[in-house]
Amino acid sequence: MNDCATQRRPRVGVLTLGCKVNQYESARIADELWRQGLDVVSWQEPLDVCVINTCSVTHVAAAKSRQAIRRMKRRNPQMLLVVTGCGTAADGSAVAGLGEIDLLVANHEKDAAAERVLELLGRHDGYALPAPRAASCALPPGGRTRALLKVQDGCSHFCSYCIIPYTRGRPRSRSFAEVLEEARAIAAAGHREVVVTGICVGAYADQGRGLPDLLLALAQIAGIERVRLSSIEPTDVTDRLVDAFARQPKLCRHLHIPLQSGDDAVLRAMNRTYTAGQYVGMVAELRAALPGVAITTDLLVGFPGETEDQFRSTMAVAERCAFSRLHVFPFSPRDGTPAASMPAQVPAEEKDRRVRELVALGGHLARRFAEAHVGREVDVLVEGARTEPGWADGLTDTYLRVRFPTQRRLRGQIATVRVTGVADDGAVGEEVPA
Image (cartoon, rainbow, N blue to C red):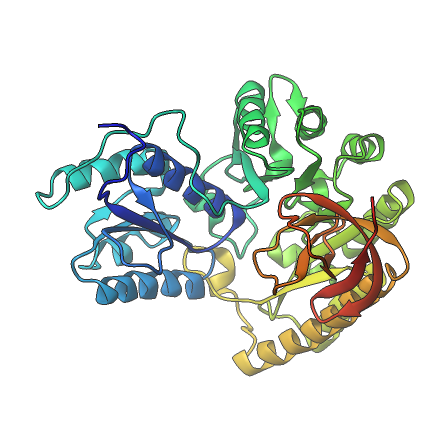
């Protein structure tokens, strides 16, 4: 039988919770299952197998992962349910005790998840595994215009609120050659932008080469027009990294640098190894070296012992840094971390109020960032997945979402757009003729 012929293949979906690294790892699992002959569809469709990639960064995330497991099995009791991810490490006993699970793949064995799924299917009489797809078969439709590229795993910062170093282990990096090989495949598949990600991506190192070297090498690959860095710790924003961004225009002028708090005492309690003043100084240096750079951040409010004055310090630093986007999270005690047992836990209603204030500030800062683009011509990588008929939308290299009317099919292409106004989720504009 021809590998590409239509036949009844087991249908598999992958439900991902959590970070970009989880998203990348889920995509790798889905791609391998597709290559092995299975039909990969949305997890919301009728399935023979569902793979759930769990998150456990907070106790809320862990609870949502367990809820997703129960909910998926209730939707289709006959479906085989496979669970992997950080929840299998940080919440191993709680997850393993769920009777809905047919197969548990430990987080450190996630690379073998597709193989384990195939073995599970082979043990069930109701499934006939098809032959792997031929290399000439096209990849499944619906992929992103921006492709994630994981280059590193693990973390050794041990922030007092974070479980990730315990679930992901110590930092380890993929080889330079392996990363570049995957990036070439990404470009060959038609992706114009690659998003470099990892648990602590600034720790990337391979035979004397660090993250700046890797970013510059990725920018040299034919077909890749943009290289975006997903997130980097403040202490990893080095002179060499800034110089790489200044020299290579393909490196997106957007840096996501978690601040977490604008108060030094809170930062010390979090085991963050910088001060608010050092962070503000770093932002000023970045803006001087990279005109027009967009800086986004994470903020954690309601940390144990955080006073109203300390919260106000965070508000002041956020406004002073003029972030283009804020990701705001209330502190959530995580069993197994030092912060979970710290005294002076902030009441939930107080955390909620502080979150609302910071979210409101973030909306104001985002609008101000968008307004600064009005009248400018920007290059937009068109995504189009969420657009209405007659419209396209996508992102600039500074991570500004821009919508504009067009009758052309531009998905996956870079269009020049003149920004004419702002919108709730970014900006609007008009296409500039080539």
